Image (cartoon, rainbow, N blue to C red; front, side):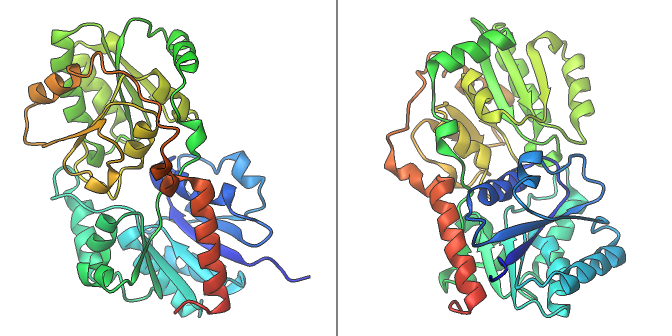
Length: 374
């Protein structure tokens, strides 16, 4: 009996972020009698791989973070040399250059660089973004194939010409759609459990890091709360800036109206409790939470730094980060009586269906392994 091919997925730090969620989603739905995944994560990750993922037959390797570059490349080289992999799939955008160098060094025939994010203009993440812009020059040095979560993310990392020449495979960040569709009975239960009856709930899902711009979000909420003290801000996520944001909430004296729920595994359910979703990001490769919010039928307000590709329906509105917090607050409050939408009948959503997209990825892998794809 032939052994099932294993794909080495280089994830980096497992922080329950969007990239990890996307990769795990694909793994859950891919046919594991044909393809198996293994995961490589940093040994300083704040979270473990979920048990439901571990039980599917993957191997997990914990290695030093890329900031310890020599140890990082050495650990990857050892894994690739011993793992009998035909494909290494790196999800670390510009940082993929190091993982794919190790893959080429160990003669892995198929090396995929996957772009999931872009970069800002330095605001709040000057060092991080400077490194991204420097490493972007080497993004096509070691991969044999280029993937991206959106046209925007692909062009940013690999260049417009690569996209126009068809060298970039866009693989949609997909979800199990059925778990996100609006359900009024479930909404009422969640709101009751959280004590949110008769409240106007402004929601956000994202890691507490400069990119997600939580400080501005809190300022926006502060302006909204001054006009409507029934407003509640629901913040879902973890991250290095959480304490700083909590302190800002205290200074503005709105602690009783801001709920920090931490990193959660039931985000699809929490969307049901919200009345409007707000994401004032400094930059996004796609913004998977924006897709999720719309699938949940939520009025959605995001920054113009979120790619236009994230728009699924007319329930989304784009605002400039140059607009004042008060302007954002006014647009949010205008959604006060906006009816929730059931989009479950929209065939357009199939491009974000994990069942459909997993089949696509499975076919791509099989062709790459057999050598059918150039």
